[in-house]
Figure 1 (tube, rainbow, N blue to C red):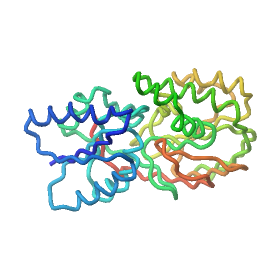
Figure 2: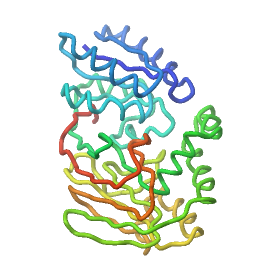
Figure 3: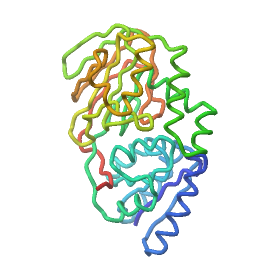
Length: 298
């Protein structure tokens, strides 16, 4: 039995439209399933926990929605040791991208029904669990501004979610001010003045397809860190087009690390987003939880 969790509001209603396609396919294949409708990420966790508590051979939980809905159910999936299936229907869809899951919902469904899973690490902080990336600083503020914006709704309507993040970069660049950050990675401490962001990543890309940590792998037992520091606003603006292709790795003001235990302390309060969801404002003590989740993938 599969459990489908449908966020009807994700992607400006794209979640519900996707579910209608999936339901038709499931019925035609005579697949045993149950489904739950949710209109918020927070509501999904309780609904899933209550359902998984029922005596049944649960083969997986399929989330039809965005990264925020997936983020909210991670503790439940870990607790019940049930694999995650991703049917992308959000704006960024970084989880699907990180695990090579196609945007087409029926193709994503076929991956789940094929039955092959891969072990994935989780990013653990005091604020909870994250699957894709923990963004702290400028990148987090970009995502926060995008989520509260009208231009995100417009971009979702035209199915160009990545464009909303590009607009968000320009929007945030006008007001954000860098500050010093101290990063400790597996016991080695470094301080970076005028830091714009630190991104702790479990997958290669975030923010709708920005390849922030091109060498990251979700099942290698380590977390990749990208620190952008000591650059001007113009240099930062020029950075983001290179992040789309991963070419920023060669820039002198971009630093990479990799480790299992990470502490990040900014001199000023900074917003952190995990899977695009608000986590806390620091300080941040971060651990990798190796192979904590199974994900249906090829």
